[in-house]
Image (tube, rainbow, N blue to C red; front, side, top):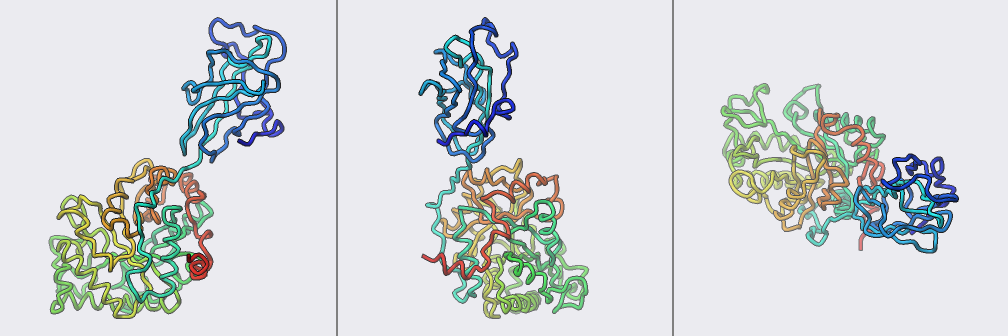
Length: 483
C-alpha cells in the first residue's frame, strides 16, 4: 500500500482533517491525562490518505508514528463506531489496524486515547481519519448474450456503428440522456449543461406534434422537416433518440379537427390498434399518412448520415389494468401487430437508420406477463423501462432483472424515462447498469427530483458518459475495436 509522506499530511495543521485533541475527555475513566513522561507519539504517515476516495478494498491500514510505540492488549481503535478486528505494532513505530472493507463505503478510523503510547506511557492524543472505497461494478455480464447485429439486416452503417458502441459500453458505463421540451429543441440538454458544465451523451426528441407540422400541416410552430436542430446536435458530438406520443383523431369525424386529436385513450376514442392495422379501415389510412410523413423526416436524417435510437409505441401495457395509450387498448396481440406493421412500413419506405427500442412496463402488467407484449427479437434491438417510482436515487435491480428475463439476455436494457435517476454508485453496486438513463423534462430536471448537486455528481462520474466523452467518429471507433 502506498504511504503518504510527512509533508503531505502534517498533523493538526499537518493532518488537517485528522482530528486530534488533548482535552481531558480524550482519556478513558481512571486514566490521568498527564500520566507518563516524554514526548507523545505523533503520526507522520498513513497507508490510506485522509479523505481519500476510490480506495481499493483493503483488510488493514498502517499508521506510522515518529517514534517507537506501544499499545495495550485491550485497544480502543474503532472503525465506524465498531472496534477494529485487531491491532498490532510492527517495525517498532507502525500501528497496523485490521478490518475488512467493502466497495462504495465510507469509513472513519478513530484511534482513541489511551491506545498508543511511548515507552514511558505518555499516550498520544486521539486521532481520526476517513476514506471511501471505490465503486465495485457488480454487473453480471455472463447473464447477457447481446445480439451482435441489428434486427434490420439493411441497417445503415451509422446505425450499425452506434449499436456497436452501445454494446461495447454496456455494463461498464452508462450514457446520460435528456428529453426535449416539448419536441424539437435541445432546451433540456442546455439546462443540464448550465447546471453541470456537461451535455448529455443522448438527447431525445418527440414527434408528438407531427400532425401540426410539415408535411401534414403548414403550422409555423414546429417544423419537423427542418432538421437543423438534430443535425447540430450530431455535429456537436451527440447521439440522437426519438419517441412518438402518436396523436390520432378520436373518431372518424375528428379527422380534420386537430383540436380533437389525442394519444391518451378515453371513453370517447374509437381509434384502436386492432382497427389501425386493418387495411380497409379509415384508421389504417390515417396511420399510413402519418408514417409517410414520418418517413420523409427520417429519410432526411438518413441522407445526412444520422442514426436514431427509435422508441415508438411505448408503455403499451400500462398498469393497474389500465392501458393509457390508444396503441395498448386492444391488448398485447394487436399491439404487436401494430409494432410489426410500423417496422415493415418504414423499412419498405427505405428507412434503415433506426435502432428499435421497445419499452416494457414490467412483468406484472395487465393481461398477463409483460413479455406477452414483446414484439419479438427480429423486430427489436434494445428493450427499456420507464419508472417514476424511484426514491432516494435507489437502484431498481428487480425491474432490471425482470427485463433481462423477457429476452433471456439477448438485448441491452435502458432506463428510457424516469423521474428520479438512480445514483451511479447504486447502479454499479447492485448491478443494474442501464445502457442509458433519461429523466423526463420539466419538473424532473429540478431540485424536486434531481438536485443540482446530484446532477453534478452524476455527470462528472467516470462511469457516466457525457457528450464530450463520446467517440468523434463512431464508424472509426467500430473499425478500431472490432475483434
